[in-house]
Structures are given as C-alpha cells and as structure tokens.
Length: 265
Image (cartoon, rainbow, N blue to C red):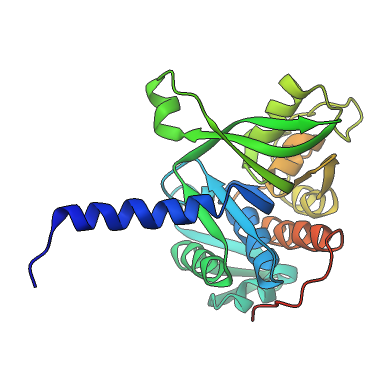
C-alpha cells in the first residue's frame, strides 16, 4: 500500500486534538510525570476517575531513570516493595529491608499501567500559572515547554480540574506559582514553601508520605515536592516514599469524590 504523508499528518493532528480536548475539563490534573505522579494518576484512573498528567519534559519518569549517579538501579524499602511488584516490576532483595529494581523497567511499568488504566499523558507541556476562584485553585494555565525554552511570546491555554496534584519534585513548580501569584496561604508554618533540607534518607522517606496532603484549597502535594514544601530532607535514590506518597495522594482525593461505578482492573 502506498503511504501518503498528508494522511500521516492528518492522523497525528486529529488524534492528538481528540486527546487534548478530552483533557481540558477533568477531575484531577497531575503535574509531573515522576514516580509519585505516575502512581497517583494510575490509582485514580483505576478507580474510574478522569485524570490527565502534564509533564514538561518529553520523557516521563523524573529522576528515576538515572538511579543513583547514573547507575540505573533504584532501592525501595520493604513497605513499598509490594506496591512496585503490583505493577509487574521485578525486585531483588539486597539485604533485610532493602530491595532493588531496574530503573528503566520501573519507569516503563509505571507508565504502561498508567496509560492502560486510562491516564491521559501530555508531555512537552509546562504549567505556567493557575486558575483561582474564591481562594481555590480550579485549573491550570499551560503552554508548550518548547515555547518557554525559546522565549517566544505565545499566549497559553487553560484547563479546569476539580483537583490538582503537584508532583513536580524538588522545584514544587505549581506551589511556587501559587505562592508567587495567587495570594493563597499554604498549609505550612509560614504559609509558604519552607525549602528542601540536606540528605537524610530515613527521615525523608517518612515525611514524604506523612505530609502528603491537601496543601491549599484544590491542590494536593505528592512526592519530593512534599519535602520541598514542608522543609523535609531529600532522600536520594530510594524511591519507596515517592511511590507510597503517590498512592496516598490518590486515596485522599478519592475520599473526596463521589463514588463511580466504573472501576478498571
């Protein structure tokens, strides 16, 4: 069969527009496609909820790809090993309480299961602002990441969401915008982000999960953004806390939503 380049172009544009239009009004918008964002989005979608995930880079997975110092193995503690294996990731016990997994396999599995569950992932898209009504975040202002990199004067577009999850890692990008522009107090001691502290893996893993919560009206924080917001330490290439934080964020949001009959396996 002869191939027509115009048909190829039409197929890509029309299918992407279908996907994009399905995302401009959603229940939950997850910002950041690292481990916590992927897990949160997947658990929400498995419960039959409408979820879109925005990732500013072309590739998802956050810092998980490189493991520790480009040794692409990750460590998870016992509490998270079962969660990882539920995604089909093979783990190997290293010693009591520590298991390892291949970083590439892990990212691939999380992404595959998220998409199969129904998560819409839009990569190459950055969040540059939020939409606020009556002191509550109700949406995001988005643009192509390439537009930002090039410094082009191109106006953004808007999506609305009942809930937003900031899973943008160390930079806590959504909360940074809220702090700078929205005039909304965050649920911290100062009402602002406290900043990430130096490495302490055990404490960081604990606080990442404990402090996963609604940080301001309409916005939950998950993963490394939790410690950047609440002043917790960083944890390095151990990823259990981020995985468990993503699941907790999904559980907290699900507890606020009306039940749905559509539950995906």
